[in-house]
Image (tube, rainbow, N blue to C red):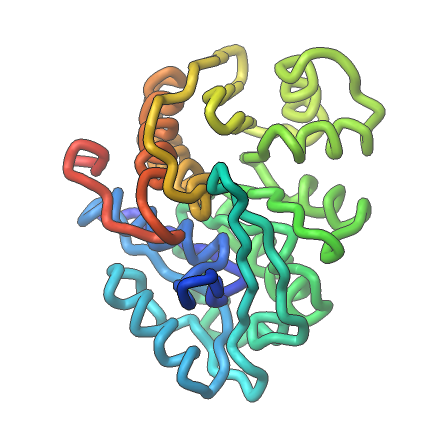
Length: 294
């Protein structure tokens, strides 16, 4: 029986200097998960797009990447966009349109049935920037089975977050993924000090998290799951851009948590997947056979 996996939150177009590319962290996660999982999973996106050209192109992009779109709503608000700027190292910065379609994600009856089938759902803080979408995301997380992975990708995008939102999101998650910029912020909220691993383990204890993953860019990643810890270096790649690399890491992490792989295996595969994403343009791409699950 295939796993049932969902990303929930923003769908948008990353507008690069050379033109728009499909994106949004939970949508990137869904596309990466679908490519990596193949027939092992049915992957869906829960979001909203506008009744416009970019909205139809977003649905087409998801379907081309084998992501199911039955839960993508059509809104009277425009499809989301974000202006992406890359520095000399290929590292991205973002400027988001406000009041986009994904800010108006409503609860519909079909989501009740859908939630009950989920084995894993990935959400972030940006997707909750409006009261409407926040309410829908919270309800979905409440209605998925207790056994389901509820993966929080912190994904701080100023000014669309606050301390209360981060704390509330942590309380709804059982898996946490964050990067080396986000960990110190979350640590300060709790007055946690010590090494990265100390802070990760204290967060896991505080929120009863099954797993905490810290990505460090070129320096690799650390994963803590119960008493097991994996700290591995990064891989040397020719970086084209880093957009979507963290989402690819999360997708790989999720699949290996579902199949109960060892922490070192989880980390090795996630780093390799994120590294490959850095070597390719844009936020979504098909992954080569050696990265896909059998």
